[in-house]
Length: 133
Image 1 (cartoon, helix red, strand yellow):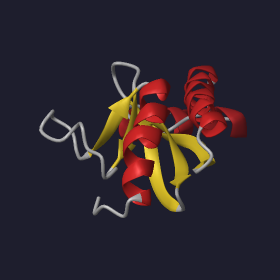
Image 2 (cartoon, rainbow, N blue to C red):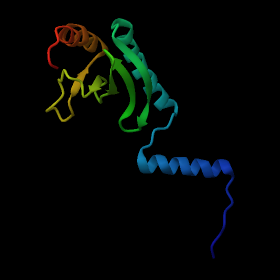
Image 3 (cartoon, rainbow, N blue to C red):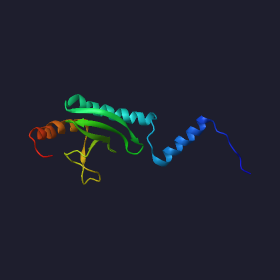
Image 4 (tube, helix red, strand yellow):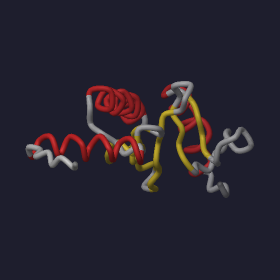
């Protein structure tokens, strides 16, 4: 014999949210996720405070596996910054590339300090000198 169980709206929402998370890895703004976003936001704000041509536009969660990402502007061009497994920052598809061939796509990976140095010492200088990068 089949039994019909009536769920409250809250119980139903909880089941749906947990099912979606388990099936897709969808981002959830739980305590851990919000801490991850805050950590990334703090790091990109360090860069923004030091580099006058770097602007943080937004920071938000993507999924529970890849984590949050920051949308930034560097000399008016948009980029995504992600965190890596070894707690570095990775600027996706950045012209100065130190990650191709290392099991990841083109981009630049480093600490906030290394990114600040690269932006001032390499990228900004190259753009000012009108090199093709």
